[in-house]
Structures are given as C-alpha cells and as structure tokens.
Length: 320
Picture (cartoon, rainbow, N blue to C red):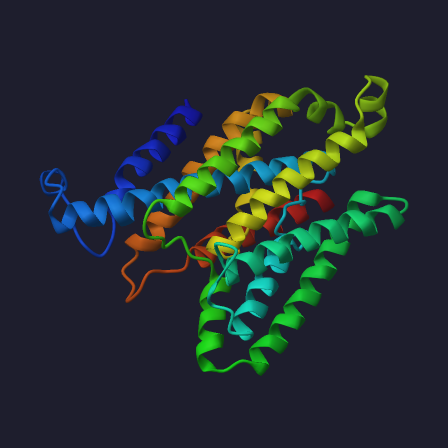
C-alpha cells in the first residue's frame, strides 16, 4: 500500500510538472497552437520534463549499477569523481573561451564529456594497482580525484574573469533549463540504451553483486561484463553532465529507496529503479520551480539538500 501511494504521487507530479513555472498555463490555451502558452508548453516545459525524467533514469540506474558491481552502497558516479571530471572539463572550455561549436557539439559539452570519460579510464587503470579491500580503496580514490578536480577548478576560477566565473558557477550548480527537443531526444536515446544494456546483463549483474568468484563459477566473464557496463554507464553520465552540469546524490538516494520499498534481487529492481529515478528528479525539478524564490533554484542544490543528509545516514548506518 505504501509503495502504491508513493508511485501515485510521483506520477501525479509528472503530469502536473509541465504546468508549473513563472507563467501560469491552462489546457484551453495550450490547445491553441499559435498562442504563447502553447509555445511555452511545447518548446520549453514539455521538453524539460522529458529531459528531466530520462536524466533521472540515467543517474539512478548508474547508481544501482556502480553499487552492485563494486558491492558498496556508497558508490555512485558522483562519489567516484566522474561528475567532477566533467565539471572540470567544462570549466577549462569556459576559461579558454571555447563557446563555439566543435564537431557539431558545444565546446563546453564536449570538454565536459571528455572530462568524465577520462576520469573513468583513470579509475579503471588505477584500480589494477589496488589490493585488499578494493571497493573501499576505489571509493577513496574517487573522493581523492574529486578533491583534486575541485582544487583545479578553483584555479580556473582564480584565473577567470567575471563573465567566465559566472558561467562556471551556473554550470556547477546543475541546470535542467533547456529549449527545444534536441537534448531530450539525445538523452532519451542514451537512457534507453543504458536501460537495455543493464537489463540484458541482469543475470550477470546479480551474480557480480555477490562476488566475482561466484560469477566466474557460473561461467560469467566478469571483467568483460564489468568493463562493458561501466563504459556504457560512464558514457551516459558524461553526456548528461556535459549538458546539464553535475546533479549529485540521485544515484545514491534512489537505489536505496527502491531497495527499501522492494527488498528483492537486483535484477528485479532494475526497471523500478530506472522509473523511480525519473519520477524523483522530476519531483525535485518541480520543487525547484515551485519555491517562492526570485529565480529558479538550481537543481543541484535541491538534490544536494536531500542527498547530503541521506549520505550521512548511510555512513552512520554502516558503522553501527
């Protein structure tokens, strides 16, 4: 019963979200395609909700994937420094003044994507030298990379001018403000590809969540499967962060909430986690637009306010 109520509320938020914002809209105005309300709805509000839903799907599913593969409930692309790498890459592009398009992509997005991919390859390379408790060591390695990236980003701030720093601040806070259908289309395709890949490897993922030894005994090529899933998830995260900026804690919070609602095996929670992640981020975005503030609250602030205390709770619960 509890899960039914939660899902009903989340779906209701998804339906209401396109009508929330600085400009009030009603259905009668939207039906007139030439009206201002219709343009706002179809060119701004609806694409944003779709983009937000699939962004939440990518973040939540990546979080579940990382936590399962590394058998650590604190593992996410955010805590491993992948988002920080993308942010640093975008900051470098902004500092260099590369605002023009390169190879059909905005330079900021391209550099952000390269920063995320460079981080995952660096993590995979350094993981070869880890011994003992590899999961904990890899988490600490990711935190160390995040701190390094933050220091490098501060250097970019110091060297940048006012306009560059303002652009960088806005990027680091995360934003779901998009116009048009190009970004929602790209992110939705990438999100569905990630979902297909994770679901296709659901049985292997279940075994890898127990241990690599048990997976090998069942004939699973653990290294190949792990590398394939990590690369696909990192590609999706890198592309998302390059467009929206870093959005933290969704990949941490959602898998644990779904696990509490549905104490099932990982393979049975994949679809639920993906859908819940989409609905959850739409809820956070709706709250950011509905709050009575002078300007829209950045989505990264909203998710951090929710995820920060949750992260502390997870750490404390693991110590006890």
